[in-house]
Length: 212
Image (tube, rainbow, N blue to C red; front, top):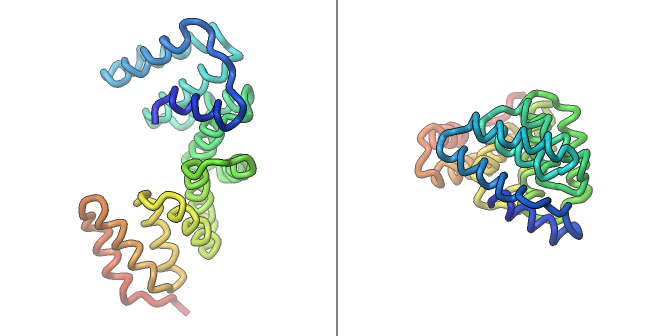
């Protein structure tokens, strides 16, 4: 889903996002065209300039967050998404993306709080699935495997095509000693096309028993 498609969906779900001043949409679109051409530095410079010209426009910060997130700059993306959320707390895309960046940075408590805030206002299956995956990852990291399995089961229910969530669920269930774990790992392996490492993991899990 494109940046402005997300804006339109947010408008429909939350009673409207802030109107874009003249030229802003075109400036953001140009930045992402430049990114697709490999001109990431120029694209980011243009979006930074946009945030300077419109410091209280959440869409400008959200776009900067998206660009940085796509470039694996989680720290920079978190700063931009955080500013977008400060300006527009209704923006679920920025809120969930912020939580995912915090998770990737190992900032588990802020990530947990941010996922909780997002879940409290979610009304969209795609966003909820992302939240559940994030919460599942946090639970796995904390050694709360049963909780992780519950979150990930909900995630794959909402987004059955999310193979990464399926693989995570498989690993959580294997850790719990459930025979369903291998099935989920194999499901994830077969959907990629065949992921040999996951398939081998599924085969090993067939005889898995929890340690006593």
